[in-house]
Image (cartoon, rainbow, N blue to C red; front, side):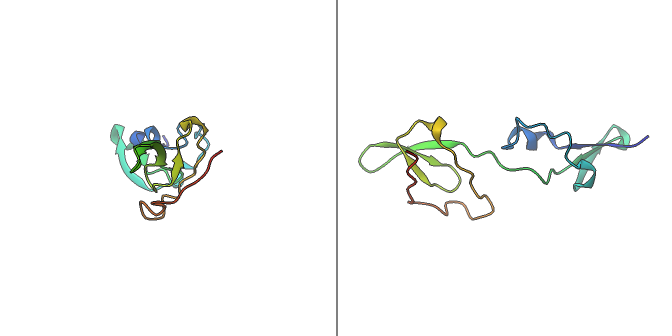
Length: 105
């Protein structure tokens, strides 16, 4: 019987692709990190994983509320957070956009 390869569940929970059908990904080619069921289920680190970044809010020095990326700190201003489309490059250091402003209007 061939072992079933499956991604570590916690990764899926916090992945930007959580709502996608990932069943066609080549899990058997991904790095093994564990196993279950006497080796019948191989747990892998998904190489397609991309951290889900949620916009958060802060207050500037004048008391005005604004939204920003919690990873890179790119500032979007006081907008509806559902209108923010931001693909953060998590391969760069955290806060690499600190104090940069992005107008989403």
